[in-house]
Image 1 (spheres, helix red, strand yellow):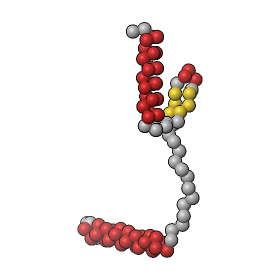
Image 2 (cartoon, one colour):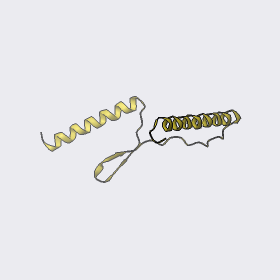
Image 3 (cartoon, one colour):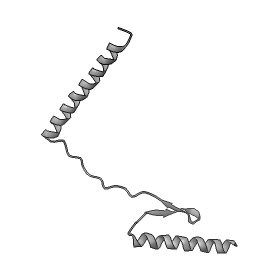
Amino acid sequence: MGDGERGSIYAKILLHLYKVRNQRLIFMPYTTEEGGRLNNFAREPKIYQAEPPNKTQQRNYVVMGVAALALVGGLMVLAFSVSSIS
């Protein structure tokens, strides 16, 4: 197989992939680099402004923090009580 035939096969494959992508409405942005190489890059997500937590969420954060401190404290007491250091 000569270089010309191999190039035409690659061109047919790329054309087929392009058609398949367009049929499925998949758009992958790309740039063409030197030498004709394609460089795909990810689509950037939509950026939005975060909203501050409301009163219920703030209360839930406090409850979870207290529960986490109780869990860690309890594990430390358990570890100290079963260790041979005491």
